[in-house]
Each structure stands twice: as C-alpha cells, then as structure tokens.
Amino acid sequence: MGKNRGKIQDQNMELHIHEGNEKEHEENYEEPLLDHEDEKLIKRALIDFKCKVEDAIHGNYLFGIPDTHPCHNQTTKEIEQLNEIKLWGVALMPSKPHEGTDTLLLKFLKSKNYVVHEVLEKLRKTLAWRKEFKADEILEDNLGPEFQKVAYLNTVDKEGRPVFYHVYGDLKDKPMQYLEKMRSEENSDKFLRWRVQQMEKCIKELNFEPGGADSLIQVIDWKDFQGPHTKELRSVYRKCWTLLEEHYPEIIHQYIIVNVPLRYYVSHSFSSRLITHKPSNKIIFARPGKVTETLLRFISPENLLVEYGGLKRINDNEFSSEHKVFELNLKAHASTHIEIPAPEVGVTIVWDVTVVEWDVTYKEKFIQEDEGSYQVVLQDKEKKGGERLCVRNSYYINEGGMISIFIHNHINKCKKVFYRYKTKPTVPTYLLYKT
Image 1 (tube, rainbow, N blue to C red):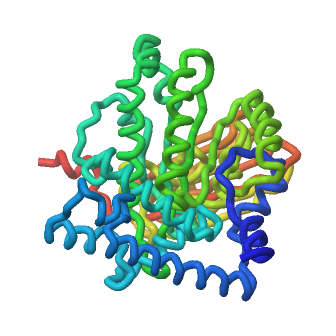
Image 2 (image 1 turned 180 degrees about the vertical axis):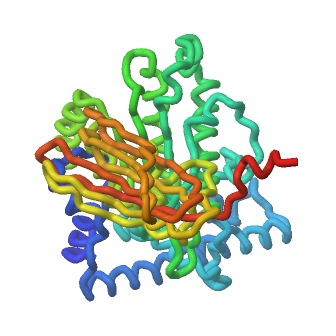
C-alpha cells in the first residue's frame, strides 16, 4: 500500500498517552477525513481481510490450529459452531454476514493500520484470548462489591455514544491492607476480570450496524487517587490498558482523564512525546479547573453528570431529554437574569441551574405580579473558588408570578450558564392531611 498506507498511518489514532496543550486538545479530537485514494485502499483491505477470515474459518485455523493438525479432529458440530462464530453478537463469517460485520472488521483493520496479515493475527489472538479468559461468560461472574462504586454507565455523548465513568477516587477510603492485596497475582487477576466485565457491559450498549453508536467514551477520574497507597492499583491498571488495546480495538473512541495531578501531567507529557514523537488525539487530560470545560466539548449539559458541571443526576427521573436546556454566556464582571414564568397556580416549578466555575453571586426569588405584589427570597448566596455551581430547587405556585434568578460574575472571565425547568401538578401538603 506504500505511500498511501503511510498517510493512513499518520492519520490513525494512537493509544499512547499524550498530553498536548489545550489548543491541541480543542482541535485534535475529531476523526480525520479520508481522501478518495485512502477510501479505495481501505475498501480493498476490507475485501482482502474478509477473504482471509472466510478461509481461516473454512480451513479451521481461525484459532491458529489447522484442520490437518493430528491432535485436533473436529466433529461436525464443532465445525458448524465455528461457521457460526460471533464476536460481541456480530457474525464473523463474511458469507453469512451480520449488518455489523464490516464495521467490526474495520475496527480490527484500523487498529493495525490496514495491514491485513497483521490484522488476521490480531483477530486470532483476540478470539483465543476470549476463549481462555471466558470473556463471553464473564457478565455472569460475581466479582464482589469492592469496585461497584468505581464504574458506572449513565449517559451518552453528543454523537450518541455511551459514556462510561471510572471514578478511582472512590477507592481512597479503602484500607491500606486492601490496596496492598493488589500485589498478589490472584487479586490482580480479579481486577482484570472486573475491568473486562465492565467493558463487556458497555459493549452491550453499542450498535455495530451502519449509523449506530459503535464505540464509547471513557471518562477516568483521578481525583483523590494519588499517593503511595494507590501504587499497586496503578500498576494493575496499566495491565488493563494493554489488554484493552490488544483485544478491544477501536471500541473506545476517546479517553478523557480528568482531575490529573500536575506532576503526573508534566511527567507523562514529556515521556509520551519521547515515545510517540507526535500528539495523540485518542487521549485527553484535563487538570482540575478544566474538567467541566473539557467534558462539555463532548457531552451536552443535560447528559453530563452534575458532579462535573452538567445537569444529569444519577437515578433521577425529574427531567428527561424532552426538557429543553437553555444556555447563556455570562460576560466578565457582568450580571444576568433568568426569568421563569409561573402564571398557573396549583403547580410546582422545578429548575436546574449550572454555572461553569464559581466566583458568583447567586440569588433566587419568587415575584408575585398582581396588584399588591410581593417577593419571596428562595436563595441568596455568594460563592468563591471552585470549579462549578450546580443548583436544583422547586417552588409551589399558589399565586401567579415568576421565578427570578440573578447571577453576577465576579471575575474577569466569561462563563457558561445552563438551565432548564418544568412544571408539574401538585397537591398541597395541607390537603393531604385534611380530614
């Protein structure tokens, strides 16, 4: 494939860790566009790869053991099972394709720069590893409660990809003896199995059919996850990283690592430049103070967790995607007003407000608009320092009026404000207890 193959290689995303400057991060996370020649080469590589996969299945060497091997005489049933082999629910036999077969095979091709013989070897190793690791049955494993709080799948990004969170700071309160157990091979293997189990859960949310969300966003939070007590877990996580590169090609569209300690940011920025010699757009680091700004490039505010400056709350059904999210730009040292109309009585108004970064004065009040109007102060606070302000409040309307929200920006920097609201019929509490 010569010169053109090199072009594809330059454009292909790498999995080496790299922390470029923020300008690089703003510009590099999008997939590069391929020209006509690249598209022709990719199609040719896909056709070649599909032929080799078909030959490997028919020749019984997809797992590296040819049908002529004296120790491997397969039954008719085993041959039929090989012909029906699937990966993540997608048929691999090109002559009996699933709608997602091409998408899946292209992921393997891209991971090896479209070098077909290398891709076939990668697929064979992945299938052999899954068989040995029992990855297809791992969702049924009970791996204990140790890591239940660490990982959760709750939202989607702007392109509809699932967003998977790993919050390792939740392990900071674990006793030293527990983390030191990670030095043992048994507990290290348990962590690896847990990580694979989480990956398989995420893949259940993917759709490999054309136009479907066939990859996910991985958010890794390192807040409060530093120091010697986490050394063992970091070592095991590096093993996980290698495993995912080898056996889950192009499943993770983007890694976003947030709340990265400055010393780690600097040291890995230097070391990864020595390794890669060029920036990577597969992994983005966000230091404290840049977390919300970074995540909002990929995740809309209604789908970003409130802990990171969005409006989404775990296990919360108060709002849905049908409720419109409004966005305001709050200029430096300026103020803004949000007015929520409340003309209907006998309802409760619920609202969410997020200000990206603190250093604001925030006030809420209900204003009754008829003759002899009055005001009810709901909140009045001033917050300095920190990364974000997230508020949810509600008010029962017994007289027509409006909810007025005042926000003043104290610093010389523009800020984003997101808000939404809804009304819902409400029976006053005194009527519930009325006899």
